[in-house]
Image 1 (spheres, one colour):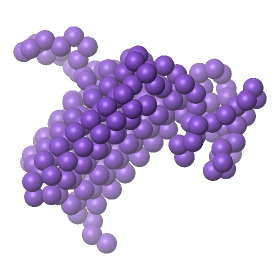
Image 2: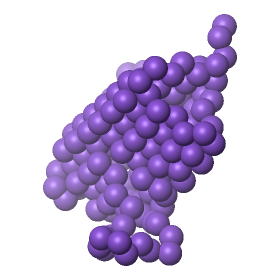
Image 3: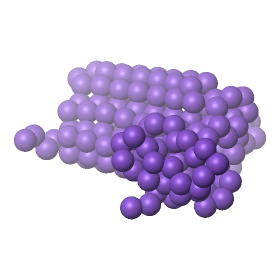
Length: 191
């Protein structure tokens, strides 16, 4: 099996960018020097990745996404088309903060198409952000948020199905995974 990245001839990868084995980078993507992209990722057309961005393994970034300095994507993250990331709460032309705020997308979370994430947030493990949502607060592990501003709308299984607790503290997904509600703001997967 081929272990080199596949890079479309119309993609631009600056010298000093690190691209993992079997990662695919499609047309008109531009990756700056210093960026780190893991293995088995799919970086779609018309994406832009700044040099202080860190991307884990098996990440999918759909068309029209720009990742700015301070954005960190852990393993198995999905970013939908035209999702918007920001890294400065008070932007002004030619004025740069000493350090850009960190936005962290934890393992397995999904960001819907055209969602907007303000800087300095953490999107929890296996969480889901709905298409078009404007995220202004952290999202808990397995949480679903939607709307503008994004509001909590329930819990989601690692497989992507919405969980139903029905007044109980335990939920079982059709995929076989089990969860326990620890509080109104936290659930845990249980064996």
